[in-house]
Amino acid sequence: MTDHMISISVERSDPERGREPAIETYEVPAEAGATVLGALLHIYETCESSPAFRCGCRNQDCGLCAVDVNGRPRLACITPLRKGMVIRPLRRLPVARDLIIDRRWIMPFLERFDLFVRDGGLREWPPRLSAPAEHARLAACTECLSCLAACPSFEAGRDEIGGPYHFVKLAQLYWDPRDGADRRAQAALLGIARCPACRKCACPLGIPVYRAAVAPLAGVR
Ligand code: SF4
Ligand code: SF4
Ligand code: FES
Image (cartoon, rainbow, N blue to C red; front, side, top):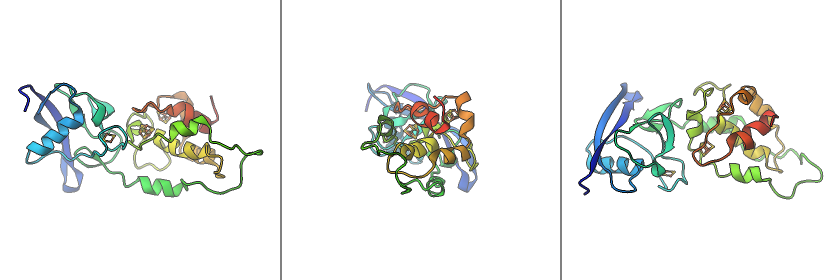
């Protein structure tokens, strides 16, 4: 165990049991290269009642560890640990418990918009033989949902309001030469018309969400 310990704060809540959000403070080791996820794992291993959180790959590949750090969405596994950090669940999204986001709304969204390649005949002739570069960039999305937490328009629970994540999922198919559905019409149903005045989509993986997804679906540059 390192001698150098620092304090961090974690917001805890349990909506199902009526536990309101409250901040708890923990002492964690601050070794060189320490990350926010490392601190959460330390708390899990050493505290009897540790905050609930998700993680998987520990290498920015799975998208499960996204949390709010000092007011900004971050992937916990690649975010350097600093003294006094305040870690909360992603904003704007429903909380299942502590740092865990309730993701049960995702499947109904995918079903509502038929988010699979829908055979409607080729949209272009002659057909493109390969997907454009935008498709490859958007395919890197790990569904971490950080972009929703940073979108000023998105509101969880309102079906007519989409956010960057929704538009990335639609645009993955928009750029797929095999898909025959009208993805721009679907984006319009999710209120994409407001986006050209904003353009603030942000992704911790560097996916150009506005340029590769939102602008093409909105029909603007
Ligand atoms: S676009 Fe980026 S921020 Fe949004 S869900 Fe995908 S990986 Fe996460
Ligand atoms: S451009 Fe649209 S999707 Fe992107 S952050 Fe702004 S309102 Fe949200
Ligand atoms: S643990 Fe997989 S992205 Fe962080």
